Length: 85
Image 1 (cartoon, one colour):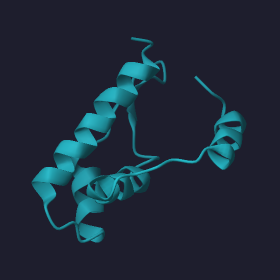
Image 2: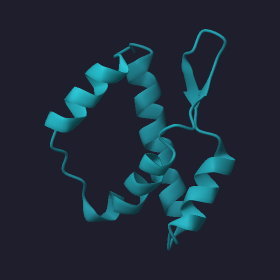
Image 3: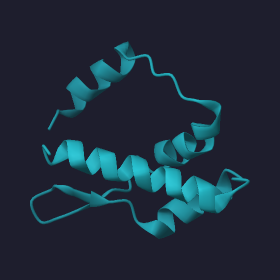
């Protein structure tokens, strides 16, 4: 896994295109960036649904069900990448 300094350097250099239909899900993921549950070894397990729900409420997400599905898809892919699968 990348260190914080490495991740920050990559984030500053990376340009990401987000499709309009994914924008609210991206905002929720960003709002929950520091909420990841981790196991005893520090490996990420997932985002708590209560934190996702709170972020969606605060961001006035229009279609919560659709947004949740998109967030969970991104979460699953992030976990897959972090686990090296």
